[in-house]
Length: 338
Length: 280
Image (cartoon, rainbow over all chains, first blue to last red; front, side, top):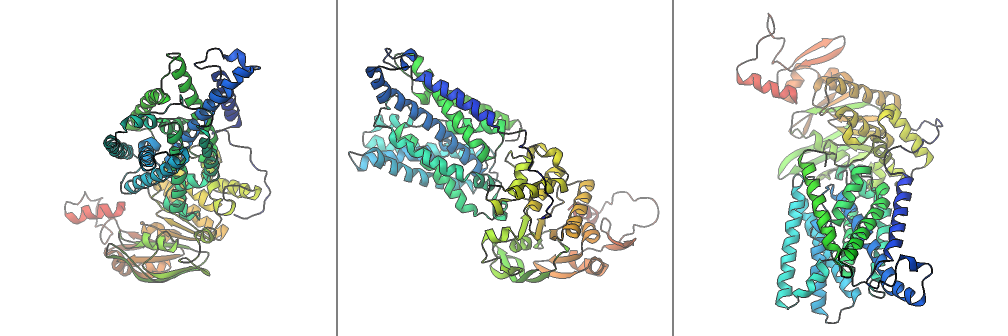
């Protein structure tokens, strides 16, 4: 195959992700982000006041609304990308941080951190949550490797039950230490507590996200199976564990800062890959944008539905996500290629 | 040259490869045949470092498969197993581009693109280049995988049961294509095959295995003998010479089937057994 006939490099393929997808998604997200800055409990600051803001208005924007927007976008993007990577490296569409015990393990880690160190900083909580999330996900992967038909719905069932067991342990421990009321903060994701100075560690997900992107092709390759990956010169186990760490760090950081957002990592990558294919490198940027947009929409609905009070984003995302999850299961049960 | 030395491997104490020693010639098409459980696929996996044997060594030219990095081997030898269940919605072109991964690590150079296009041309896949793998027929999908293997541009190509799930027409054209790859591109091709007649008609060299051992190897003319086949398969297979093709008539024991019109399905157990063998 090394004949040296010169041939022009072919035009990019028609199907799949195109630049226009990314531009449109970015544009929609920017407009949505801008509009969302005009929403909040302080009704004196509306969309019309953003250009230019007065000193008071700028204070509200800088301490509350911009941090909140940043947290919404980062959390939405990172949980969706985490789900995308997880689904590919396990070659199963029903795997995501919230259907494999990753999130529950992170919550258990936060509880342990809070119990061990009375005045825990966000960073310490985060480190311990990352460790428990990685450990919890490794256990899930071990179970996965014992399941014969790894592409099916059984995997999601095992993951949900395993997450349930971890959550039960967490509740039991919290109950004994009289800390049950704190659990809600982590298990029900909400952006209402996001203020300047209390969310910045969330930017870690950007670094991890870049690492994930650099490994995107390798994740796609190991998703084709161990012998396929070995043939192309890749160490299957090593890439699997790199993926697992990327996913666990992303999920743990979001849980610590925002709390769990159920089904997000499941439905966003599923919808994106159903439309545009499973090549991780191609769909990762769009998955991040779509995830950010979805959470932004959920957050705006949560803030406006019962204004000036608000619904937690987890409630809205969980409601929509649950419905989409059921649709995905029914779709695969009908025999569509999962 | 592929050299296998003294390879032994077990699954759960069951010996599947028993001190196998073998040298496979360069630039030829070699078929490994034998009954189920003879150790063919395991041998192919050991040669291609997908399985690390308990004992023994494999050399690809000067490379020791046991110690050379997976990366170094991936530019010398390509292997395709039949256990790829496709769960990824990957387009044909993306799949074939992954064949360049050992060289480009995902960042394709203009030369990589040229090789990918040649592989698509060679397997007549240009029309399907943007289709997802799950939208292809079994034959087209198999060709897409072979295109990826060709894009990997290795001297050695190892395929485990490449005719699996292909109908007669696609099986025959797949073998023709592999024969061409050996003749035109100078590839060394090693196949695990179930159908001895495909092995006989398309191979330069046949390796026959039984119970984890290489029983006999040689040219198709040497292997396609009634006594030899009995030793390998434990079946009485009549061998017919048809214009130089040596064909094993394995559908009926010790064919030809007696006088008169085609006999009805045999009622005895041995007939039923033969039916399953011919399918495999």
